[in-house]
Image 1 (cartoon, rainbow, N blue to C red):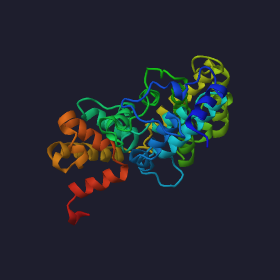
Image 2: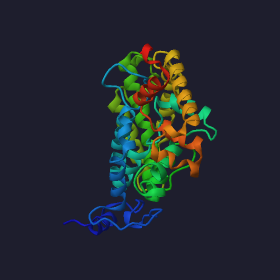
Image 3: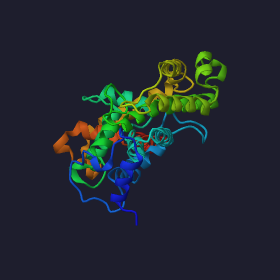
Image 4: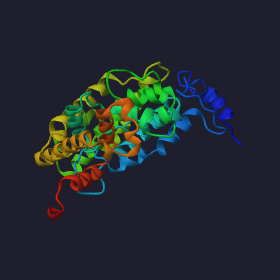
Length: 336
C-alpha cells in the first residue's frame, strides 16, 4: 500500500524546491486526523469535486446566455480547462500538481447564474457588493461541506489560491500563481473558440499581430502561452510570462471585451434586462420572505444577516433554477 507518508516523501524527491509540499501545509482552520493514503492537497481536491457547488457549475453560464448548441462552454467546462492547463504548467515546472488542481477546480465555485452579467447585477444591488472570487472563498469556508463553521475545512494554500485567482493580490504559492495565469489563458482562448463557432466574429477579425505571435488555432495559442510560462518561470520563485506574450494576450483580451463580451449577439439587451429582472426580483423576494429560504440558509441569518444569506442563496443558483423559480413565484399560472 502506498501511504500518505510515502507520497509526502516523494514530493521532496521529485518536486522543485519552490513547490509547496503537502507535509508543510499551513493547515486547516479546524484540525483533522490525516488520511492514510491521500495528502492534504489531494483531500481538498476530492472535497471540491464531491461538493454540490461544483456540480452546479454544469448549469451556469460562462459567456453566452442561453446558447443554442451543445459545444459552448459552461462554468464547469471552463473549470476543467483551467485545471488541465494549470496541471500541465505545474508538471512542466515540477511543482505540486495536486495543489494546483485543487485550486483550479475550486476557483469559480462562487460564480452567479448568468455569468458575469449576474455578477454585475448582484454587485449593484447587494449592500456589500459582490465579487465571485470572494464568494468562492465563502462557499468553501462557510456554505459547503459538513464542517460546521469551517465549511469544507480546506487547507490555507487552497483557500489562498481560490480567493486570489483574480484581483491584485498574488497567491503565496507558485501553484496558486499558475492558476491565476491559467484562468486567463483558458477563458480568452475558449471564448474566442465559442465566438467563432457562433459566428459573432470571424478568424480574420482577430488582431493579426496577436495571431502571428501566439498562433492561428486554439491549440497553438494555448501551447504558446503555456510553454512561455514554463520557460520563463523555470527555477524561479515567481510565475512569470514574457513581456511579448503578455502584451499579445492582453491585446486579445481587450479585443474580446470590445467585440464579444459586450456584443449584442452574445448578450442581447432583452436577455440582459430579463436577467436583471430575475435577480432583482428574487433578491427582494427573499429579503421580504426569509422563511422561504432553505433551512440550512435560515440557520445562518442570525450570524451573517439576511442580506448576506439572500446573496449567498442567489449566487448559488444555476441559470435554469433561477429562471424556473422566478416563473414559479412571479408568473401567474394562467400565463404560463
